Amino acid sequence: MLEILSYGFMQRAFIAGIAMALFTGIISVFIVLRRVSFLGSGISHAAFGGVAIGFLAGVNPLLTALIYCIMVAFAIEVISARGRLAEDAAIGIFFSASMAMGVVLVGLSKSYTVDLFGYLFGSILAISKAEAYMTVIMSVAVMAVFAVIMKDLLFITFSEELAIVNGIPVRFVKALFLVSMAIAIVIGIKVVGIILISALLVIPGATASLLTRRFHSMLALSSLVAVTATISGLIVSFIYDLAPGGTIVVMLSLFFAIAFIRRIST
Amino acid sequence: MKAVEIDNLGVKLNGREILSGINLALEEGRFLGIVGPNGSGKTTLLRVVLGLIRPTSGLVRVFGNEPVEMAKRGTFGYLPQHLNVDAGFPATALDVVLMGLYGRSGLFRKSTDEDRKRAREILGTMGMRGYEDHIFGTLSGGQQQRVSIARALIGEPRILILDEPSTSIDVVGQEDFYHLLKGIQKRLNLTIIMVSHDIGTITAYVDEIACLNRTLHYHGSPLGALNDEVLKNLYGKSMEIIMHTRLCEKCERLYPGGEC
Image (cartoon, rainbow over all chains, first blue to last red; front, side, top):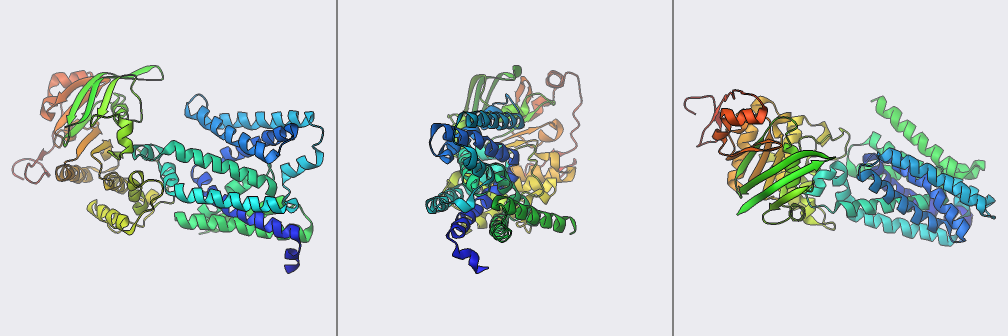
């Protein structure tokens, strides 16, 4: 088993995967509590539009995806907050419009084929040393931001109206949450891909919420589930020569199923 | 000092006029009850005072400032009518009370042992000792209400705003609840604004009453609100208010008549 760690590409995959899993484990709890799972799924799929812009413009697709995801997240918030359109409708529109735009832009680009598959389904085994370190730095930075806003974000999640009346900077905290979610999505694109990243944003938190009602335990369990699924998914992927994005999400789903069965049987 | 001043307030929501021509001044330390039929704009008026809704016309001042500014300074303790907290939401009664301190403590400060001690004390005052570690969403409506009052009070607000606080409390519990509020008001010189549809009970506790149905039909002594003309203007028909109890001036408890 230790043979796995002798390969440089697996070392980098474990480093990036664990860093991302720790971070998505924390943000996932808030995504589930705030009931914005569809928002996470919508923004992650919209990232395809951002990636395609990068391809066409000849700049790093992850950078354009990050900017695009942040813009989409704020656009959805603004449109639904003004009451002009229900949030799920706004998400549905941005989700499909961005995917469609991505398809059109990729069609205009000449050099997409192999790379595009990596963005859609992840390419953690092809991650470079610099990308692995960048993933760790971004994960640590966003977790530090979360450590600061966590109590206020929990209050906003409990009741946004009460948080406003209590003088909490609600818009600022929510904006940081959306930016964090966009960063999580962009980091996740490398690991599991655009199609499967929403699983990492939702399943760890949902699994933890089935196992405990204590907030800090929920955060710890969610991160533990995400990290364990990432490690075991990478190992399974290595042994059976399967796509790691798929095996990680399958492991996550398995943990969720076990937690669900445990919950309904007690 | 005036805690709340409202000058010719008008509010339209989605093109519909909810409030019109409201004028009201409330001194600090007074207990104001707002009554009126369903859909009369009571909750909207509270939300305007809290800075959650911007007026379409007129002015609202809280201690001489914009309500939004005063909210940032932790001026308000607020108890909404409904919270709709999921039973699985991961917050204990103690966590919920501590939330009342977050606005004042700022982003970087975490809850201290001193904060937790204070939160436990206030929960005790609310009759919730022993429930500190219970998940908030699993408590009964009345228990959640008490925890919410503790949350509203822990930040030492200058104005306590309550929207139909007795809806989750049974009739016997309501007496204790109002008695508790009256005691807190006197002890802390707290300004209280409370919305209720129960004109019969509220008049026994408040210092002033405002009768609202889109516009103010009466503002003054609670006993004056019980005259036929005010009630007819308010509810659209003559009605008799049944006062089941009276308030003892010495102990502030309700009693059914005769001596306390």
